[in-house]
Image (cartoon, rainbow, N blue to C red):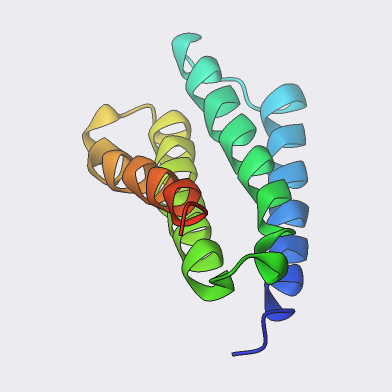
Length: 111
């Protein structure tokens, strides 16, 4: 796979991160205000790891780094968005997998 593909993945993820972050800041009005913080956490991790995706092509293993970051964004941030939007923590089962994917992505830079 062409390592520059990760720039396109980062672009799509960035558009989604900014859109979801804007919605969370201006339009999201949960019944329970604690879910606003869950949305904020999802948005922060989404945006930070999207920025990191831009570096994927210059890593020694771009597909591992980019794949793990993308998995983390979908599993962690996606789960947090769902939990906050639905106001139901039973949907949080994938979040730890996403967290481990983030850790794995950063650890892959060691090799």
